[in-house]
Amino acid sequence: MSAETNAGELVQVVALLGAGVIAAPLFKRIGLGSVLGYLAAGLAVGPFGLKLVSDPQAILHIAELGVVMFLFIIGLEMQPSRLWNMRKDIFGLGALQVLACIAALMTIGLAFGQSAPVAFVAGTGFVLTSTAIVMQMLQERNHLHTPKGQHIVAILLFEDLAIVPLLAIVTLVAPHGETATFLDQLQSLGIGLAAIAALVLAGRYLLNPFFRLLAQSGAREVMTAAALLVVLGSALLMDFAGLSMAMGAFLAGVLLSESSFRHQLEADIEPFRGILLGLFFLGVGMAVDLAVILDNWRHVLIAVVAYMIVKGAVIYGVARLMNAPHAESLGRAILMAQGGEFAFVLYAAAASAGILDANANAVLTATIVLSMAVTPLVVAIYVRMAPKPQVDTSGLAEPENIENTVLIIGFGRFGQIASQPLLARGYTLSMIDKDAEFVRDAGDFGFKVYYGDGSRPEILHAAGAATARAILICVDDREAAIKIAEIVKEEYPMVPLLARAYDRGHAIDLLKAGVDYQIRETYESALDFSGEVMQVLGEEEDLVARVVEEFREIDRQRFAMEQVGGIYAGRSLIKGNAQPADIISARTARERERKAAEKAAIKEAAT
Image 1 (tube, rainbow, N blue to C red):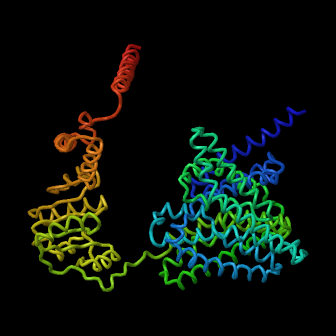
Image 2 (image 1 turned 60 degrees about the vertical axis):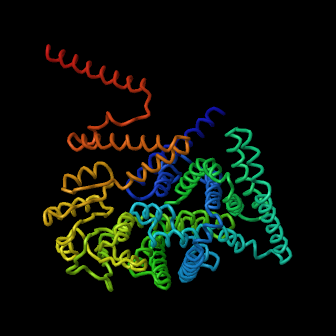
Image 3 (image 1 turned 180 degrees about the horizontal axis):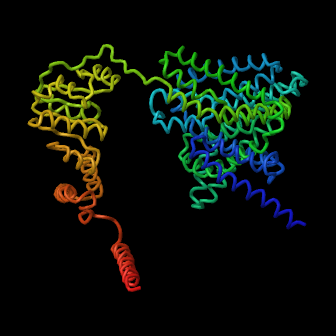
């Protein structure tokens, strides 16, 4: 009987792992994100799907530790210095957006006839944007490190910070809180503050010496156990004090954010966090009651549309209020209009506290899931239908009948450095760049840069290409550089053309396009760096100079071979770090394969 029970439990574990392993990568591959994959997998194997797992609440109870560990990692990333540098966007833009959205979405709940606590929880859960979906889309579109991307990251950081107090507020608005006397509430507040003070003191004076002592033992598994002890112990302390376990984990992370063991802790916790958080989303998917959703499909659909439209409108208004351009504001509103994965945490906490009943929890969870599912589709439609952004060239000078000694096309970090010795010798330069904002910024540093696209023949002529004694291609776009080189050599074949190359292959392509001189952008800096390394290792300066010069000569020979025979032609001149035995073994294996193929061919011909 016991063996049958264990086998049944093992079937559930295998079903959960199999569903998650299949669904998460699949959904991520098609652009819907791994979170939705876990939710769909949980729905498929749960009691409302294939019924391979019958008790989703038991899974959720264990998997909530994934949320606790996730908040610990968020705390580790919240170093005071980082928070200080982004303070205006986080606590200004982020706070304004979150508070405005809470007020607007709570109003919708009240309009639907919900009580104030239910309307607050329902609206607040939808305010918390899906970090997983938004960050993935920003990264896919290379917007993560742009100014507009950083504004969104700051808002997400504030939402991460807001999770902890929002969970605490849920406990305060719970029905049982109304019957507590003022003395009881004061006592609970005192216990909570004492627990927080104890955790802060322990983090300030005990944790670093504790981890330092354990690190001296050299036992990796002990450090991992200690990391789990800190996270779960902090969560347990807050739970005993009547506060959120998530708050304890978050505070522990913040206290260790500037510790020398921070990266070790993050590496130790990350595997547990990832597995348990994925298990949490699987549990949420299993807990979605399809019968309730079918019975309330109109309510779910209306809630999704109303919440997303109102939240998007508020986000747009806040962005415009903070002087963001129309296009950026609209893009931010569409990208962040959905609910997020931590709404499930909030709704689960509200259900445990008695604020939400099972029906309301199922409807609200379905609302969040549906909003997350449609977001990638809405964003794709917006990107396809939105008008192409117009470059604001007002106030920018365009080249017109310029005559200078040197024409520089592309005035980024490479062109700026190249210009300095030339200017120091008194040469006159004309500079063009097609980045309007950069052209404006260059004027603040004393440069006269004209706005123009160097791949257009009329711009080259207006910028003085015909009278220039040299033309420098310094753009960081490989294809654009080749196109400019071809145009210049066709229009002005007698003008010396020098170009910046990205790598060896690009350098060869530029030479084929007709440039007279090219240099790989990292070539000289890498050689200087290598020479400095050898001096640090104790080599004499003369020897270092000789070794570097020998490499230059070998590299010239290799490059000449590659121009004729392709990028692999000079492999024999590369100094690799593979052992001779490894090379001989690889050659022997290839020789055996060749001989076997020859024998097979002879045998086939004979038959």
